[in-house]
Amino acid sequence: MSHVQETLAAYEGIAARYDELNAQTDSAALVGRFAEAAERHGNGGRRLLDAGCGTGGSSAAFKARGYEVTGYDLSPAMVTIARRRRAAEGIPFLVGSLLRPPSGLAGFDVVACVDVPLTYLTSADELRQALTAARAQLVVGGVLVFDLNTIGHYRRTFGVPVVADRGDRYVAWFAHPPRIEADEVVVTQFDLFERAGAGWERLSMRHVQRHHSDRTVRRAAEQAGLRVVAAHGLVGTSVRDPADEEAHDRILYVARTA
Image (cartoon, rainbow, N blue to C red; front, side, top):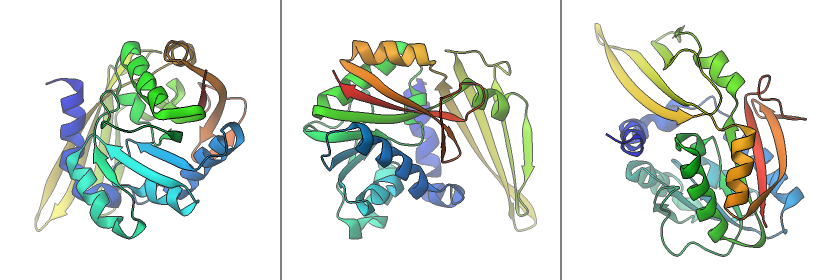
């Protein structure tokens, strides 16, 4: 099974429960950081493409901030839920991957990849391909805004196996290899155990990601016809500058059409 198929299988399997399992994530605040970066460095336009939109929470948050939004995601199940749950917002949701987006998407002022979908691209060449696809979707002066996990985040979060007691459920996660190096593939295993009558039910997810260093990101952007104009550190949803690969959780990048 390819890593793309593994990613698809993971999200198809949890689509119905994705919003519940991520209820503690402050999507609106995270989108706010993306919108602020786009408005600071972009052309002021309001057409936005939410690439890797999941169940549409980020798309709805962008819409609430006054953007005209289109969203797409790799998982048909996630897109189906987005269409149903976000029907009131009137946002079109499509199925497609970051490497092969739906056809006809062009003329956007902002392309946003929120909550690290680009980490599922497991080579520098795939990152270049995805950035090239995003470049083709932007107008002149448009910006691509995306976040990536830092090496520090991977090491802190997945460097040792963890079991967390959440009351009615247990969550366990670990990574392979346990020593995580820069610009290397990281395979993470999540297991959720929940009470089911007198026993327990188990939900397992295997995610294949890659850490992309700042050097790799900037090279891929240049090859794609983009120029990185900002890189902000994120700790939770708080912006910290300058970005620090060890201390911060993610780096929020802004790349403009060259």
